[in-house]
Length: 248
Image 1 (cartoon, rainbow, N blue to C red):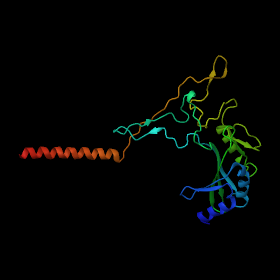
Image 2: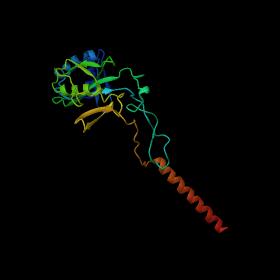
Image 3: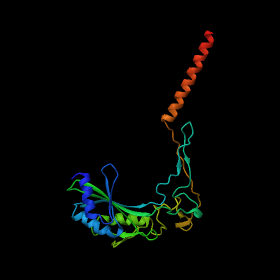
Image 4: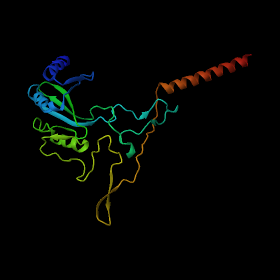
């Protein structure tokens, strides 16, 4: 079955509130409402042959489409690049970023594989409530989603309704916040160190300030090649002018 035929089949099966997106490289994304998430997953497994869940992850669209790097006005030598503003993760607490024009902030994305049909599919849903993002758990459809959903909960704070054991899996037991959220500071909320006098790990306020590490980038492209060509032309013109004056 080609991509167009499969696309049409998905629309016919999940057309009510769902849509199919094509990135132009043959990778289809089926986007469904959170209320149809579990039902869609079960249909994709039973009716479309997607017997394997390859991956599940969370996404935070806060700041989506915003660029903090300014690359138009760069130095002629091709070094560095400018930071235009404080992007997600680098902010002052009184300037905490907000979702703004982003209609749906938190999403859950799964990548499915059909071994029998030799086909892959990306499926996405958005949590309807930004303050308390929640979608149904897929553990009863693909048991392998268990730890993936725990990871998405730990890093993004997305809740999975019906999960048998939803708790943190990567961060410490006493960790505060969700580190992959775009409004989580890159320096963290607290500093952790081992205190020799107390002989235990202690938590303290963060003492460092957010900073941007700008890499040194050497560019070799047409902009600088053009400068070299212009310089060579100027030198040739000067040499020609000097040669003409000598003959005169």
